Amino acid sequence: MVTSASPLRVSAGGSQQGSLSALPIRVGPSVLAGDLSKLAFETRRVIRAGADYIHLDMFDGNWVQGAFTFGPMVVKALRDHEPRAYFDVHLCVMRPEEYLEEMKHIGVSRVTLHFEATRDPGAAANRAHGLGLEIGLALAPETQVDEKLLSIAELFDVVLVMTVPPGFGGQSFMPEMLPKLRQLREVFPTKALEVDGGVTPTTAALAAAAGANEAVAGSSVFHSRNLRRAIRELRHGLEQGQQTWQQS
Ligand SMILES: O=C(CO)[C@@H](O)[C@H](O)COP(=O)(O)O
Ligand SMILES: [Fe+2]
Image (tube, rainbow, N blue to C red; front, side, top):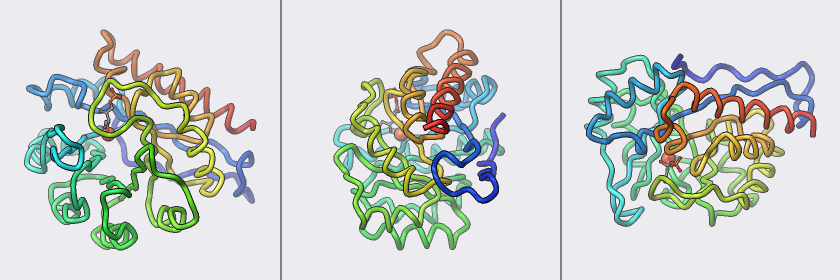
């Protein structure tokens, strides 16, 4: 079923890692790996197969060179087909902060912009919240977590740790991103932490064991013969990993 993010459940008195109850596990197929000539059909297929949300990669062919996918008009057309689905738009564009009002207008549920592409990410987060829009901060693999970044990330609803260089699907998961996830989870025990890139049931488990609770998956869902099973296995991977994280 496609839902809005459910509230985080924190056990009484606990704010440290290890004392938390489960964070909501969510699987968001990236339709980029589907048949792009049938986006509405592909979106409907993964919703029916149990997706928690739909991940939409908006690339402008500029910030990620050579990769141009679709823009707000296509997202709006999809929204008209799926009025209730949770739409998570990953903006890999120049000046992503300029899209916030339009994203709200077309009914996007959450928009994630890149730290590396945004002039003033803190101001963008405040503006999105003023619009009533959930907002995420994406970190490309080369971006390190330091004090300044943490103080900015604090303002966002989700931090997306890219586990491949942004730009295209079908790349291999970068295990060297796991310490970044651990670092973020230690500082933000209840914030949503999402991974994107090369996510399979095995890598989803590794990511969740390091603190992730949301996973975007393109190839491992759409290249599977059985979408429902693919999504179920990803969810299972996240659950297994989260148990490891809780016990750590
Ligand atoms: O943002 C991106 C790539 O930049 C992704 O959302 C990809 O679409 C994920 O595809 P797979 O790595 O799962 O094939
Ligand atoms: Fe993405």
